[in-house]
Length: 282
Ligand SMILES: C[S@@+](CC[C@H](N)C(=O)[O-])C[C@H]1O[C@@H](n2cnc3c(N)ncnc32)[C@H](O)[C@@H]1O
Image (cartoon, rainbow, N blue to C red; front, side, top):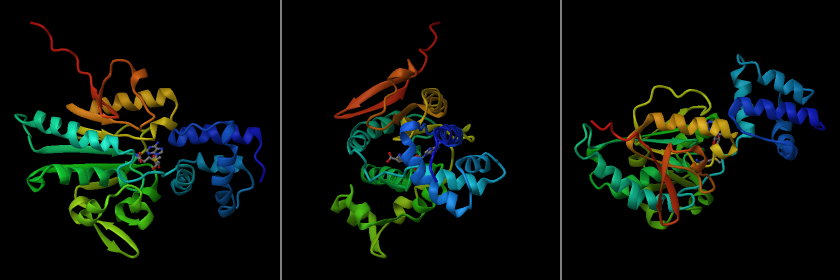
């Protein structure tokens, strides 16, 4: 079915409303390749039929199909490497130090927002195991969320093909944290136990959430319009503990957001801390 300029506008508006992803006229090929199978599967005659059906909020299964079709789950273990080095050698040691003397010195709350197929939260879990020898005496939870049902169910399985493992997992980590299964590898129970998966649309208000010490929100907000992106990071700030860190994607920056966050650097990684108001002078 050929895609007209009107179809493109219609589909772009709908996708932006549904999950924040900003497409434009140059993405006609993407719209066609991702949505043609859906048109066939549901016997729809036009893109406007697809949008009409997708706007029906009572039809969640169809809306989820659209989300699964248009989102891109590109990810890998220890993606870009340097953020994980910064986590290992700077953010985590500083966070652990900052916790000493607080009410819960051995509690860490972590959020992998837009976790895709799970490589990101599991990579964080592996770093925690490597860096905290007495991890069993800690209270650590990694919340891993994504808008895509497919991504969440794949991530929950914790199974990865050889190719996915080869993209980023060094041999020593593979032998300590994965076991072979069905021509691939499954994440160890000790790392899996740290992570809980939940479906969540970052455009919607966050559910009640405990103060978060570490947020990874990488390679998703880059697809959002500026107002949605800024709003998202301001909402993150509200749920972050005073000593928290925020990691974004390699090509993302919070510099346009004003004084909300303070950039930090470690080797090639840039990450952020919330800027807190100065204590009142008495
Ligand atoms: C390119 S992947 C990034 C995965 C991982 N954070 C990384 O950097 O490797 C983007 C993920 O964002 C998810 N996503 C897209 N829009 C979203 C939204 N509005 N709320 C939550 N997740 C979203 C997609 O389903 C996809 O899994």
